[in-house]
Length: 322
Image (cartoon, rainbow, N blue to C red; front, side, top):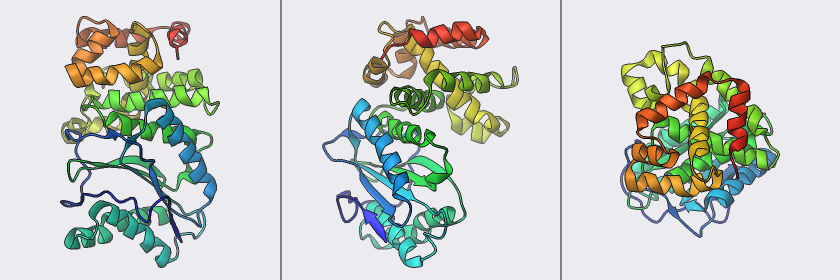
């Protein structure tokens, strides 16, 4: 059977338009809310994965603030939990009605395509975690979707919940470049996860530096991942470096930005940097927050950071404050 926490479905009161995942250019944003996230899951899937993800998400909510409206889907099959079409169809129906209410053609299309795809991927053993941003009206809906989370290692799964919720928070502000979006979420996951003993911050950052440094010299750099859509359309051969540069190098770029800030505080970065993006745009915010003359100065300093010794990089990390 399907469990839908706190409500029959995580209903959003506006139901307009067709099902879409909004492009990064969307101007519609998340807002602070008193409402808790709504959870949808198949109850015959181990409750442990639900508890772990909810703990990670709640930890991020406590740190960043409560933003929404948010629905969280936890869909899993370790053995044959989704074998029954009855169970599968309840998940699909809840997912599509959250997006479309009772709208005829839009609802039917979702039931056959987007909703059905969730179950298909889960049955095939795919392991996924992502933010889907549904922008039908003035109040958008954020969906955090976790498919077969048992496939993620523990206790990393806690930090995956933090990472994905950080994207919900980021959606309350204007769009930032891909490396700053993914790098910011990854850095916060590492840092907050370390505070709760789920992950080792320095060890995780060292591994990210190893990944960033493994990019073939001269082939790609952080600046190439300002807009990942250009990689998809114009330079698809660089997609192999998405993890290395958007996530791993991005996390270090955020570390550099915090290190160069007046407070050197992670909390102050989360609370103060993103409003600066809203006011000044991301390039000006990066320059001003980190005390750089220009965005070019920031990129030059980051490239220099990649060449520093492991001891120097460790000192930078240890200069960062809560």
